Structure formats: structure tokens, C-alpha cells
Length: 232
Image (cartoon, rainbow, N blue to C red; front, side, top):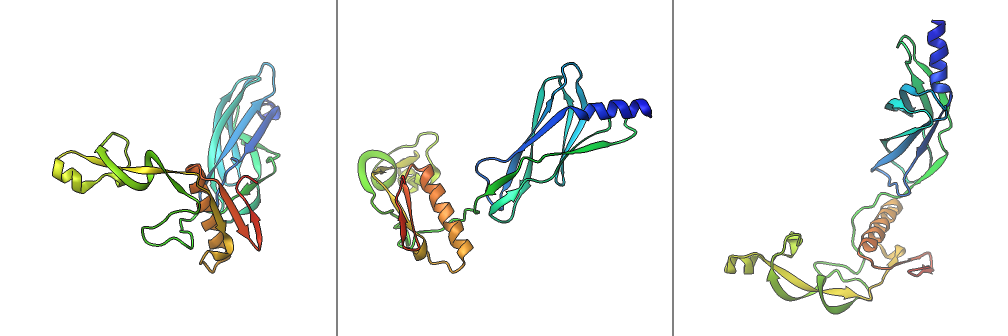
């Protein structure tokens, strides 16, 4: 037992564990936490390690001397805001599996959880007319704006832009070509969003910002009489 205790203690004694949250973490969605184990010993490897992050456990069978190993676990946080990373323990049954030895390590601090994005529409949007403020048509073909022509389907075209009526007549899939929108800019007026619940409003704004950013549309925000223009 003395030998087991000596080697077991040394096995976890020179390890550092870092737990990192991603820059973008959203409430209600799985958040991947990066778990990194570093072995600071020059010659001795580390064996049969388990890292407990809160209620979750990730297993590291082997870490080289002066090496590191990385794995991921997923957690879910219900509320937006500033959160502390869970408590972290590194444990091992090395060398004989008779006992489990653990020690607590620093968790790495706090991380920010962003609001859960929920799909919604701007107050002025209704029906199929969902144009954003300041947008203008460009003669270049794209997947936005007005229909300018039809062409043969090309692999990768979004299915929602297939013109089924023309496809049925010709026997070949046809895709709508629309004008791409340029010089667009979106200003979100928080107080005009027709949702009573404040958290629902925040989730709506989060969705609008994310969806616009993915389409390279600059986004500004107006709230409480203050206006934050795109790019500020």
C-alpha cells in the first residue's frame, strides 16, 4: 500500500489542468469546454487520469512527460450572464487500481454566457416582405432581392430557390436568380420589438445580430434613447 500511495501521489502531483470556455457560449445550447492536462515532469509519464469538471468526467489514459493532452466536455447553462467554471479535480487509480486519489485544481475563472438566440422578425417585417432598412438592389446575381431570371440547377443551390413550376414544365431543375443586395445596414430598435418579456426581446436581438453578421450586414442598435451605429 505504501508503494501504491507513493506512486499514486506522484502520478497526479506535477500536473496542471486548464479548463477553457469558448468565446461564444449561448444559454440553453451545449457549450464545449476545452480540458487541457499538462505533465510538468521531465521523465515520468502520467497514467489513468480522470478530470472531473463539476458533474462531468473526462478520461486521459496517458500523458507524456513534458507533454499535454486535450479533450472536450459539454455543459449547458440555462441563464445568460457571467458564470464561474465548475470545480475541477484531477484523479487517478494508478498504479494498482486499489484507491482513487484526487486533488482539486484551479478552475480557470469566469466566462460569459450570451443570450439564447431565438428567431424573430423586425417590427416592420410582415408576410413575405422582409426587406431590411437601407438595402439596395445590385445587378449581380445572388440569393437575395428580386427575381431577375432563371437558370439550370447547380449542385449546392439552396432548395428554397428552386423554381418548381418551371422545373416541372422543362423536366429539368431550375433555380431562381435574384439580385444580390448591397449597401445594406440594419438598425435594431430594441424598444419597438413587439415582445413583452425582456428576455425574449434580448434573445430576439441576439438572433437578428447573428443572422445579419453571417450575411455580412452591418448592425446597429437603438435602445433607451441611445443609438449605437454599425461599426461603433
